[in-house]
Every structure is written in C-alpha cells, then in structure tokens.
Amino acid sequence: MSSASYIEFHARSAFSFLQGAATPEDLAARSAELECPAMALVDRDGIYGAPRFHMAAKKLGIRAHIGAEVTATDGSHYPLLVETRTGYRNLCRLITLLKLRAKKGEGAASPDEIAAHAAGLVCLTGDEHGPLFGGPGRPLRENAERLIRMFGRENVCAELQRHYLRDEEERNQAVVEMARGLRLPLLATNGVSYAARGGRQALDVLTAIRHKTTLEAAGRLLDRNSERHLKSAAEMSRLFADLPEAIANTRELSARLTFTLAELGYEFPRYPVPPGDDMNSFLRKRTE
Image (cartoon, rainbow, N blue to C red; front, side, top):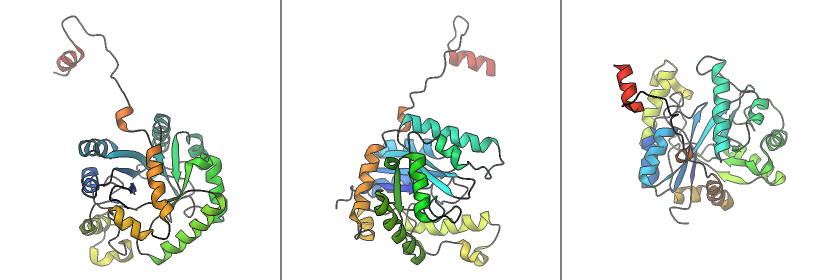
C-alpha cells in the first residue's frame, strides 16, 4: 500500500480544552511529511482550529476535512464530520446551541437536538467516550441502531482505533461484530493528540496543568503510552492488517467529504458609504 493511501481521521488540535499538544499547523506539516493527502481535524465542541488548519493544509496541498466532537447530555461524545455546506451550517448551529446555554466547557446537546441537525454530517462511532460506549448502558447494537435512525445508515461509520491497549482491542472486536451484523462500514482512525511521538511529553505537561497537579502525581491521568501521534499509511496498514477494508474505507469517506472552508464563499455585506469613500476607508475614519 502506497504512502498516500491512508487518510488521517480524528486528529485533535491544542484548542480542544488543552487535550492536544499540537497546533493545527503542526498537524498539517506532519501530515505532509507522511505524504498523507487529507486529514480531518476534530475539536471538542467547536471548530476552533479549523481556519488555521485549513490555511496550513492548503499551503501544503492537503485536503482539510472539518468536524467536531459534540458533547451529548448522556455523557457521550459524537465525532461528526462535515460532508456538505448544509452539514457545516448544521454543525455550527448545533455548537452555538449548546454554547449559549452553559458556561464554557459545560454545554451539551441532547440526542434529539443532534438528530435535528444531522443533515450533511457523517457520524463516527467514536472511542470509549463515543455514542456506542460513552452513554447509558444500552446494548451496543441498540446504540448503533439509534445512530442509524439519527443519521441514516449511509452516514454512520464504525470507528476503530488501535493504540496497543488491551481494553481498546476488546471494544474493537465488539464493534467489528456489530458493524458486520448491521452492514456498517468499518473505518480505521487514529486518536491523535500530538503530531509526532515526541509530543507526548508536552501533552503530559498540559494534562497536569489542566488537572492542577504535578507530573509525578498525575498517575493515570496521563496516557498509558506514546501512540497517539500521526502515523504513516504503512504503519496504519500494519496495525489493521487483519481488516484491510477499514483502511480502504478511509479513502472512500474522504472522497465523500467534499466540503472545505474554501467553499464558504462569504462576502461581507455592502455598506452604504459617503462619496469618495469605500468601506475600508470609511471604517478607518470611524475607528480613528
């Protein structure tokens, strides 16, 4: 498999409540080094890093997919990727909805509200905090069927991550069985928190700061290993050698995600100004 045949999904920037130790520019640059043609940036309850990520990726010839992990009232986190301009509008409206009614970092949307804004979005099933495992203790298949009702079968992907963790692999096997029973596509993703392996140290420092503790006392607050870095196509192919379709599906999904921030096409409304002025000169005079 060539080095350009895997698309990175589910990366986070440093704007996700200090969960990540990499800037959007770091992630784009490392993705280019690995010859990865596209990557999705997924911030928690926001698209904070999306503009910077889009600009950096554009300079490097990488497609920047936009998304967010939206916190739900049941405690789970929905990884949502924007497929169309309608999806971008719905994601922004959903994030605004949960932000307006709670303090920073405390907002959440109900599953019904998420379903009402589902058009144009693709939902990944997430990790242990995702809508399959992170909510109330319903059976896995029941949670998956609920996602299908919310987004449509064609807009739900059964997400798999591998960071050499035993409990993670147990969940993966359950997800594979469920996905095959419900005819959902498997998707190999990478829960990225830093661009390169060495970024683990910075992440540990940020985690300790967030929890107001020291590195020595942080204990299980820190990641168990240093695997949450961007990986090459060859590395991901080895990780998912038993599930090659999960790698192939990343390219198929990337091809579907046609929206980028370049397609916003926004123009500032024309404002009436006095003769001899344009909008910039008029604003400058008013400001002065």
